[in-house]
Amino acid sequence: MDFTPTVEKLIPDLSPRDELVVLARALWREGYNDHLAGHITVNLGDGTLLCNPWLLTWDEVRPSQVLRIDLEGRVVEGDWPVPLGIPLHLEMHKLRPDVAWAVHNHPLYGTVWADMGELPEVMDQSSALGGGGLALVNEYDGPVNDPASAHRAVVQMGNADNALLAGHGVFVLGGSARAVHQRAVALEQRCQRAWHVRAAGSGARSPLPGAFLDFMAASDGEGFLGFWEAAVRAELRADPHLLD
Image (cartoon, rainbow, N blue to C red; front, side, top):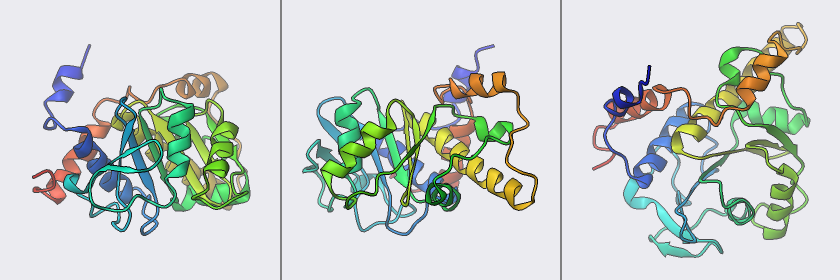
């Protein structure tokens, strides 16, 4: 049965700016909340990107404050400064123009595994949702605002859709707000659950069959209908005038 028409009725029509703001607020609740840190970009396909502004936390940004920038990081529309670490996104969109959405932040558990230089096991089915390969990238050979360092990090990431950036944080890519939301939530849950299993002294060997993990890893992040819509509704309940 195709549930898509029913799901589409669950939320209002959202512009890309609306989606970026709702995504930022939803992920803030999921632990993507390291103060002013973090960037979300949307590739508009015309040589420009939408991105959140510097100086505002993800739980307070509004659609009118979303910037449009070019691939050199220059502001095309908006009157806020561009985030300092935006070269990571700029270099990624240059090298991988097929990527529509990109999310970077420093959630607690993802950052801890990145700091340890390890990829956590997928310990349960919810942690596998969203799919996409996970890469470990040692990108800290230059400042976060250095384009050359950012370029090397994106090259190291290869074709992976998710990355742990050693000594830094996480990077999540997808074809839509729905996909990166699902992937970002699942990645932090994967990191959290694996940490708790290891802390309990049970080791970190996944009990899930390899065939299931391979199947889930191949997902484009679009398949869990209703997950993104539930997050949108939660944010609109919390701030009914968010999209005004």
